[in-house]
Amino acid sequence: MEILKTPRVSLLARPQFLEPAHLPVQWKGEASDGERIAEFAGRLCYMSQHNPAGRTTAEYLRNILRQGHGSVFEHSQYVLLIEGISRSCSHELVRHRAGFGYSQLSQRYVDESHAAFVMPPAIQGDPALEAAWLAQVEAAQAAYVQAVEGLMARYAWVEDRVHRRKLAREAARSVLPNATEVKIVVSANVRAWRTMLELRLGEGAELEIRRMAVAVLRLLQSEAPALFGDFEIYRGEDGNESGRVEYHKV
Ligand SMILES: Cc1cc2nc3c(=O)[nH]c(=O)nc-3n(C[C@H](O)[C@H](O)[C@H](O)COP(=O)(O)OP(=O)(O)OC[C@H]3O[C@@H](n4cnc5c(N)ncnc54)[C@H](O)[C@@H]3O)c2cc1C
Image 1 (cartoon, protein in one colour):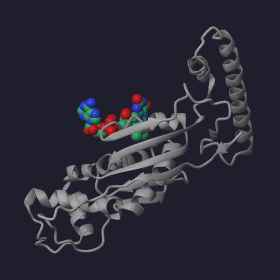
Image 2 (cartoon, helix red, strand yellow; image 1 turned 180 degrees about the vertical axis):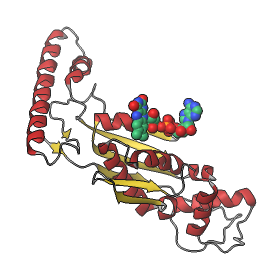
Image 3 (cartoon, rainbow, N blue to C red; image 1 turned 60 degrees about the vertical axis):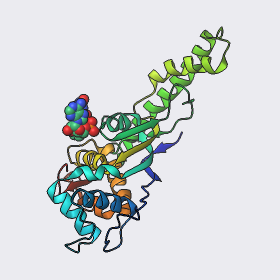
Image 4 (cartoon, rainbow, N blue to C red; image 1 turned 90 degrees about the horizontal axis):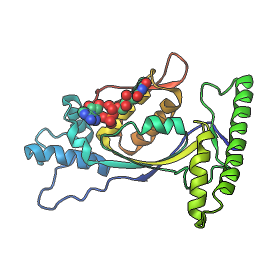
């Protein structure tokens, strides 16, 4: 049985900026396409493509963040593959609706007999808690396998094998624990990512989604520092990584 202790976050897609030849911007400094799209959108509002203040993209976007004109951040979208998180973590994640899209592994179609399980950060490092948790998870997985077998027998009259398996798995999954690993594709625009990160990096957030948010933030900061650079990762009072933002919910 595979036990996961950290999330895995992969970038699936980043924005591509195609500058219109008839409205060129006097760019200053290096920037990613996602950052340039936001600057382009902001400058269009005032037709300031000539860059009168001579700002770099980073300076320009920081000013937008300071002023709270967050709508220009809705044009840049980043798509992530998040693995190694539990079903309870993904349940919290999908509560973020505005600007988000999700595609999550289906427990109705996918056989979970060999699923991986995510150990909660709060349990990690305590041998007694870890052993008890492992035993509980193993028992739940065995119960799932047994339930699938029983349900496959019960639905033996269903001729379509795919449908029969679905009927069995969709009922058997009820005994799987919240710790079962999910894989989920998450797409969101920068404004939406920022709002989710602000809420889930906080010390009041549940530890696993907080850990996931830290991993997401690190990836997005390396992709687009001017769009996520005002977030700071620090050690919370409980010793775990946490994060705070300079410009609140733009
Ligand atoms: C620490 C913490 C504890 C939590 N505990 C619980 C809990 O115990 N129980 C529980 O059910 N949830 C809980 N949640 C989830 C929380 O209630 C939200 O569902 C989640 O944080 C998503 O926030 P949101 O709705 O602002 O996000 P989004 O849906 O992404 O919305 C972003 C923003 O868009 C606007 N918006 C979105 N939809 C609408 C709408 N329909 N009408 C008007 N404006 C809208 C709002 O300004 C909103 O803030 C918790 C969240 C956190 C961070």
